[in-house]
Amino acid sequence: MWKQLLLGSVGTGVTRFVNRRSIATAHRLASFASSPEAVRSIQLWKLRRTLRHAARHSAFYRERFRRHGIDVEAVTEAGQLGDLFTTAEDLAEQPAQALLCREPQVIYETTGTTSRRKTFYYSHREVDEATSLMAVGLYHIGVRPHDRVLSSQDYHYWNAGSWFAQALTKIGALAACPGGIAPAEVYRRLPDHRYNVLIGDVSWLLRLTEIAEKHGAFPMKLVLGASERLPERSREYIEKIWGTRMYMCYGATEGAGGMECRFTNGYHLNEFSYAFEIVDPDPAGYGELVFTTLDRTTMPLIRYRIGDVARLVPETCPCGIVTQRLSKLRGRTDEIVTLGSEGVNPAIFETLMDEIPEVSGNWQVAIRHEQHKDVCELRLELDHGDIDTASRRFEDALRTRFDTLWKHHQLGLFELRFKEVPRGSMRVERKLRRLVDEREP
Image (tube, rainbow, N blue to C red; front, side):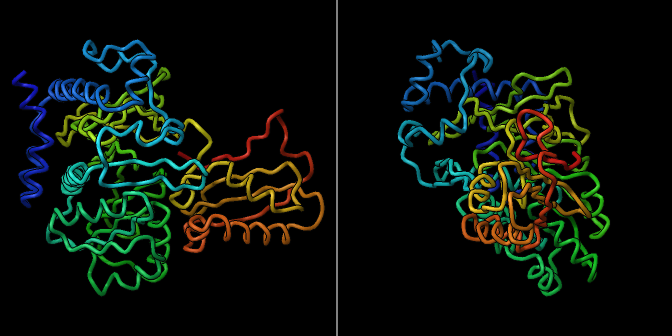
């Protein structure tokens, strides 16, 4: 037991050292667990603690444990939980009080383009610990107190903008965190304040890079992307224009943080605070990512199905960090795709098509990549009228109904195109796939 207690204190120790502004010491402490076995020991001890806490304080999990016949005191590994999972539908449908284990102090929401809003609750301590570990990840890729960082991560109701701001504060770097403003506005300010680190969603960074390619780039130490998949050719393009390395981070409002290192061969996962599994893997190991929170007492999540398809990379990375890595994402288990840093599913387009009388029942939306930018192409079969009228109606409805997605279009994060197709040409199968992602992995 003494060993688990010692190892289990690593995350807390990291937080304390970060708060004392000894980020280098915190970085060394994060590598204290010298083997994958030591990390597994931490996770097992924390998993049992989390299960007991949820059984005692959460009506939702207490009922789930009863329904699945699970005695939490007898569980020694996550696999013994069988087919017990937490889903996005659970979070959207269950009353908050059923999931909460204590009174919350911080609220975040996923406010994508669907009507199914999910709400997540944290304590101030939990946010503090999460942003401390983010700071350690930023330090690992090279961010230092003397750097000048520009983060364009938006705020809204999600956590990315505020968490990056707090992490940069803990490092002690000069930081500007204006949210999701136009890349052209940021470009004009780059030389004024001599920013040398850029943080933003992939589509935003690509748009900024296009501007820099046309008007001239400024010296950069590194670029950090988030929120979207990054094709390797886009990484190469960004690195070529800015003359530096680009890294990616992985995370969601639900949690499950990870960061690339200098070898850019997968995301180093925060296994001090989360236990990760892959559900129903294929022969190559790819399946749906599932995680369990290990340190959150306000709203713990047990085997949460986040929907991303990837595999775990158990081999130790040459950088020395022993935690498992998450491979590049292969996609999602549903039809949701990322467009302009926002998750989009067919429901948004079904809503908009109802307002365009010219369009028949057959239509399809294709997302593809051209010249480092996402293109959203609406392929429409028309009952009457012309494509220009239909496109104007669609843009008016998008501007009115989904202002965030429209804002991203206005910022140039993706292009919107319309194409009239012959009647019957798209329905080659019994069921027409409404939303297709034609981007290369």
